Length: 544
Image (cartoon, rainbow, N blue to C red):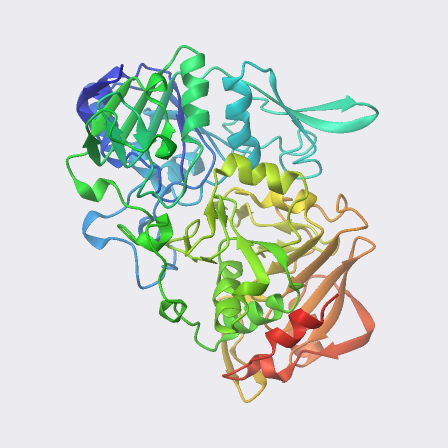
């Protein structure tokens, strides 16, 4: 039976050198109060030290991290919580080097103090595909030797390239190339975890954990099972306590038999649903909000990109949306009144509804269903999506896309590699140049100030999507505010330009390579550049 303890007592239970498993996305599932106690205990006593952190998703606070490293603030006005500062896995780096010495995650971009330690080489840093990490917990929990998959072949995770290593301090081999039935696969070996550090909403007196107010039903069960079956300890932070046998059995996501210790947080601010919202009932399924309450995007280059991406959705499609610009495609679909014609989803487990952008990415308004990310990645890896829309970092002439290591920014792939490996239509979305200023009006695009950072490069720094490994049956597009490209025969081909844009001056002069230019080069629909569009219904319902 679970024992109820304080956050400080929980911190003192973690041994030096422990492999610690986390579960969640953003601040959902993040045990803030226990993490702060671990940080403080290390400052006071030097223990626990040498921790090896394993997490599947980004668990941090984008807005404050940008300020921490002196980068431009990119978070939206509705978050994060200014009073409580930076939160998430970055807490474990605030004590400086020594507390964490190894760190493996699919996405490291928002745990900024840990990221700074990784940049300085003061901890070993690795990135693996999100679905791989999340489902590797199940392999460990079931006593299997590891995960065999094609996910990651040809990307920086492939050991013939970087093997998932993100800095020079990283030396471990976390993935191997194997041959099975005459085909190449990657093998991700199991490991022995010691501690699970998790969060739910409610615990009863037997330690059963409900996620009733969580927006994401994270991989907490898989992590708890893996740790418990490996002989480790499972610690779960909750906001509320309930009498035994009073919780709905179907709402129990981690049974008490897997839980060793429960910490009831003293500060309710330790239990935020997302980075931007303490609690949004329509995220966690308590009720649905009117669709008119969902924000409409202003007319700018971002909205143009989202509209053009939306034109690629077929009627009845199951669609995945990634973080950044792609997440705002959901707002366009809602504004155009086409929610009933598409099922949008995110890798966190949201099915249906309207997925949210940062700082609430991973959650959705009015979801039809919320499943675990393990289940969602099974759907994705099995080819259950019709289309995905993901971000653009750097693109080269072979169609490779780097979103995991930009300049000196270590970011990681998130679910990018898993999603692009099996989805038949992949639409990459982002501005053509970074840090530019634009005017969108009267059916035309005007560049007010040209961007200072090129995205179409001779070579990408890191391969997150491999144009070489893209199957011939996969349609791949690159949508920007001024141009649309396609991957054809593993080469980048320019197919459309925006009205008001000059091909030589505004496109070719700002690329490190000369793309092939389609002989039937089209002008993008002028209506995409007007205040009201209203054209999505005709495009979607007319697409075969």
